[in-house]
Length: 296
Image (cartoon, rainbow, N blue to C red; front, top):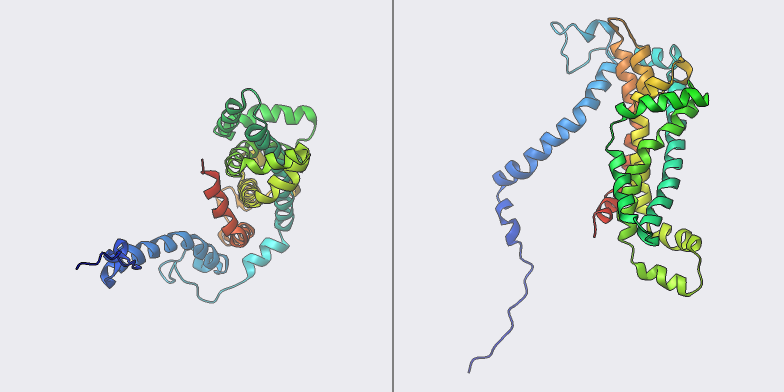
């Protein structure tokens, strides 16, 4: 007599068996990963060694290797922090980026929640138009914005950048938060409405606590874009003490055909560290929010 038995479940890895051999793992996994890491980290390595190279080694490739430094010096870093306005540029960049990010997140939260949850007439079209506004190049927008900045009287001030940066930050942040709010079950809000909660209470006590990864992702994007922005900062700021790091390093450390490479690389290196640190702390939230934003 034949006894029918159910198939035994096994933890099988048939889908990954092509990676079982060492040569295939090296070719398919380790080699592409090594190339990616090299391409990603080499610019930081180049900035670091250039920042500590003596002047006589910066262009003398006949006697010294361009990929290594002999007798490193801190003269370029000392010059950058003590003989230029770099600390002030760094403070301006931090202040402008943080203020622009806070303003953009506040406006984006209200806009995204209204479009996704209140469902007013034309909500979808409004959401699409907001995202299309993000696709408009800043090189086109800065001309009319410059006229407004002059008329308002905030030219050559940090306030000019704080108020103009949200023009390109809010559209993308709104689109990102719309996708994340869409992934939050609507039944939670319905239950809160039945219990007598107002829209403000639902937003602050139900939606926002669940949308923390999305808020962090939008905040990282807004902060990074504000930190690296160049066109508006170059157009609306003229005095050295009000410049940001991207503009100050380029305009103050390049004099005609003289490039102070050591100080330039040191400024670029220290200017990129805050963003790197920010990403390292919140990378898990960033990946989680991007996954939630594309859910339907």
